[in-house]
Image (tube, rainbow, N blue to C red):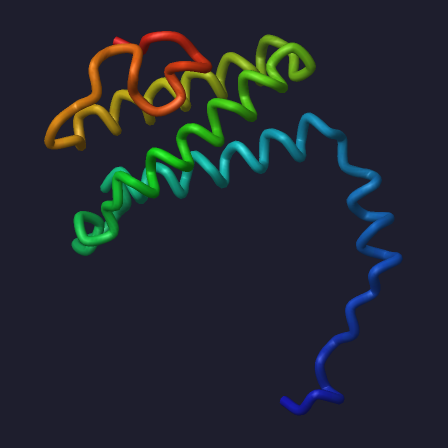
Length: 119
């Protein structure tokens, strides 16, 4: 494929498309991406190489970002969306603790300063 064969990026069309997407959907999509990445970094990926992809330093950063996004946006998401996102976050926080060789004390794990202690 030559450069001339590549489809052109239409910024105006992309802007119009994103303008049509509700904020709740964008927040939820971003949260799902963060959750997926954090799960992989916690070693929860599928396949034989999942343990090699484990990187708890990276997982911690992703979980903290997710906790911040969910905590800040929860009042605007509605209980149905916020509840399922909080459940996913809590599961990741617990998975992180299980994956850690030296687990953080309860209340000091990734994002727990934003969500409260996870047991």
